[in-house]
Length: 125
Image (cartoon, rainbow, N blue to C red; front, side, top):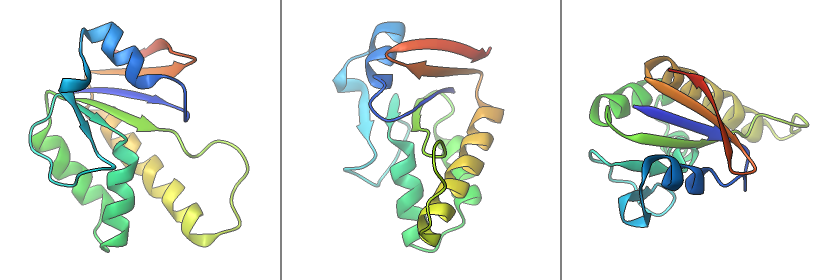
């Protein structure tokens, strides 16, 4: 598994296309769909986390299951924990759960990249 992280609008998907020779046909758009099978690229993993929270699911357990199904996938995760801590309790919890899930993904990933302005820096592997 490969994990690609970065802030919103940092061209993470473009980085994946260029780095790994992929195209839009390889992408599972998590914000538009929920049923995940073994996919090549999972874009917006954080949207799955939001769905799991809304359904009162344990995010870490769901992340572990997800990893078991998607061992050969490229996971793209928006970093949402930077900046001002929100006053809203739900938004704080969402940041915490996303951070925990991201840590689990990074632990299992063979490679981890951080992307800013479309430029990737290899953090692991």
